[in-house]
Image (cartoon, rainbow, N blue to C red; front, side, top):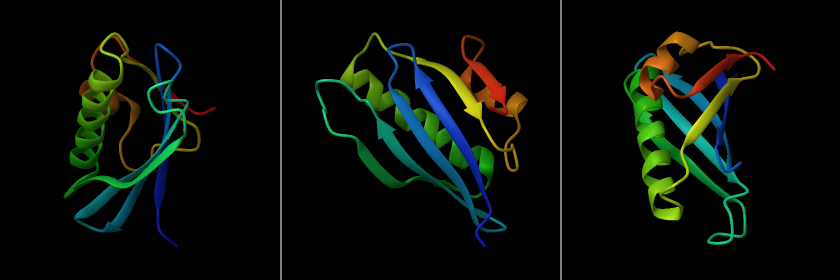
Length: 112
């Protein structure tokens, strides 16, 4: 069984990103992303995968956040990541580490 960490990302304008941070090997992590409710520019939901990869969970997560922020800047420059939830666990990257990557203005939750 492939170990994963589920991550839910919500923006201020209620765009939703569902992420699986997957561990493929001791030094290979990948984030698979489903983007939901992107808005009128992209009316259909979209799935991307793998969206980011890294030699550590932190590196893959940082690349994911950077990619989402870049996509948001193109979709709607006034929208930003507002909240991150880890509904099941923080197996690979804990809430404090996520908060450090995301910045002080983003709420990071552990659990539903």
